[in-house]
Structures are given as structure tokens and as C-alpha cells.
Length: 141
Image (cartoon, rainbow, N blue to C red; front, top):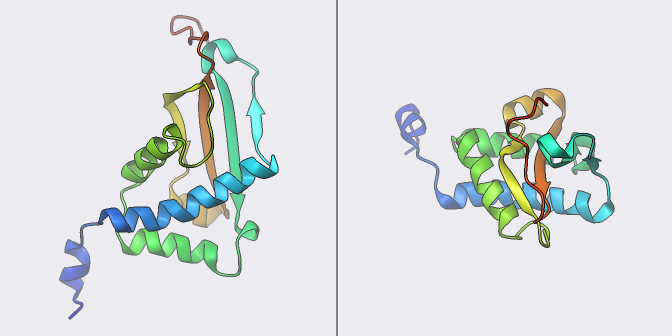
């Protein structure tokens, strides 16, 4: 029997995270395949090659955007955990092929889904470096 207490005590499972990640990853992979992303190379020395993906609520069918939000909220998915799992999936090549680049872990951001619901967009930004590149940690940027 479902109770308020059982809802409050619910701990998300790997399957809960995977259900949301599968949807997000499919959307981001489609944006990559379509070439509908932003590549910012203004300050590579300080920030790397920054990719930005924007999933609009209009990119999804009917109530899918809202349903994704509620799925994440009702299962108490932790935002930082969701972001970390997405980072791992991208670095492993599960979402799209990276080739010979590395992701900059501290320049990886998935917009929290509660903000996404309010703004009508899910945003993902991450930075990559070619093997011969390094960030200049000491420079102003």
C-alpha cells in the first residue's frame, strides 16, 4: 500500500536513473546527429571546446517533457547523481562517439530538471580537449 511515508522513504534505484537517462541520451544523441548544437571555441585555452545542447519542450511529443520531469521527481532522483551518470555514459561513448578527445569533468553541466520544466528547455554543456591540449589553469579566463 502506498503511503506518504513510503513516498518520503523511497530510494531511487539504478532502473529509475536508467529510465530517465535513456530518454535524455536519446534526445541529446539526436541533436548531435542533426547537428543542432552550439560549439563554442572562443577561449579554448581556458575552457576547452564547449558543446551546448538545448532540448526544447517542443522537441518532444505531447506531454513527454512534463512526464520526464515527473518521472525524475517522483523517483527522487538526485540531480548530481543524474549528472554524474550522464557524464559517465557520455565518456564511455554510450551517447555519441567521442573519438580521441577527453571531457573536462568540472566543465560538465546538465540543467536541473526542475529548472528545465520552468524554462521549457533541458540544457547540457560540456567541454572537450584534444589529446595535445590542456587547460591553462593559471591564466585569467
